[in-house]
Image (cartoon, rainbow, N blue to C red; front, side):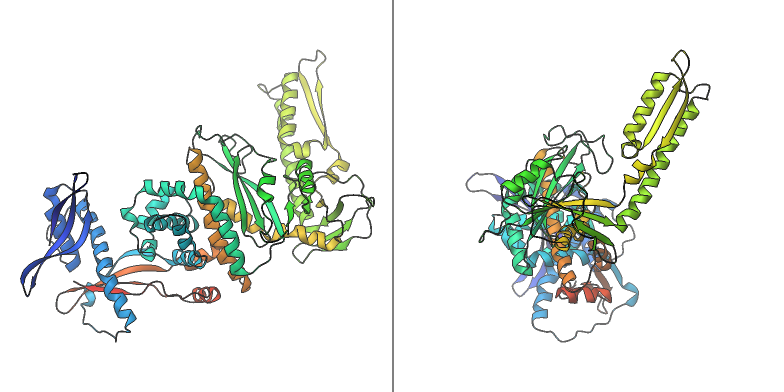
Length: 608
């Protein structure tokens, strides 16, 4: 076995190209011949004087030979990579052919002391998400849109990597190359790819965003057969590592992760009541009342009909301007009110509308006959319990800081200057603005007015009782709906809250390491595509009354790996057998619920 260098000349350009092949000499009926075992590419990564050592090391690994003086570490590492390619290449065609012909059982005598396992690669979650992509015919759609087979494999690697091992592109490439068996499932060698190609694939997917969003929407609806009547709009932001000065959307704002020192970008999401995304948009990081609400919602009508969904917004986005836009374009909406109703006169008794998890009573408020809206007053026991704990926590922290300020007046080096003490109290009020308005605070000054002598405060119980009570208001222009119907429509937001939370926290959304706008947008778009595949899986489980989140599913099947077993046969040759671990217990239930085969590829073997 040796490495052979070949050269080829391009007839058009006249340029000469070289390539390396791993070759072995074999005896045939027509005499000795050379057989190519593996194409090694144009650059092996070793100087030519080390090629014989590499070829010998590959041969030693394949035949399980032990050397008295081992090869150098960098040669062993490279040889192991090529051995993996050889075993995969030679065993694929032979094993696949035998599986098709239902070969009879094969028996062989092996040295049990020589059995060893190598190249463990995770395939459980990768196989599951790949099957979801194939159910939605995503690979075919990507090829229809102009991606080559290589680019399609790289795109699926990036998307499935975000779903299974969410992280940066650099980390994803390392995971695909060294830890995951996704390459075997796709019949693609990610080691021959590069980190730059993984970056560039997001550049290719981003221009296809609008087409793919419509494709996902139509395909998911056809596959599951659901009717979508409600659309929920929400915003979430992600912070940037680095300055991100090359990204005009990167702005300072209020970070959900308390990273106010970092620039942010905002992701706007439109989701239906089943948890499937309709539209997404990347907005400036300081967007609070996006003008793009209309752009994202007005195209949500079903193409073949004049149907328009009911829009649900939380209080942060339910501005008067946005509600006016919805009324102007004849959209129904149910939103959480940003302010209390003008009148608290109930139009009837409080009616129980909640469930065992959240006991809620609600009633409509009286309104004029020509009113465009209905207001719904709600009292939630669960919200009241949470609000009570929050209120006590806010009170404790605020009063502790007031006590610290008062104690500072008695310390030798404490802050005593009257104006500075007022500034300190002002900053405390701003910091604890949710509770500070419920306190009466006085700062007493010395006779000359220069020093503060005491700080006193008093909690205003009436105001405190009105803060964080578990009571809230809903408003809607669906004036023909009753109490229960309005509350149930809005409660849809709670039903898909887990989907929103998962989207924000568990798919590598935060932080973003890219600095350029197109790379940031591409990173977020790949996250959205990964979410589509995950939600497609979870929705099928939900239809079977299995209410798992993705983290539970991922943990359940992550023990499934693909591994190579080597053993020396009685005649001295080496058997290389690569197979996947079998599904068991809950894993089998999971595959059955999804209508999938539990087998991940078939066993492959080669004797060398």
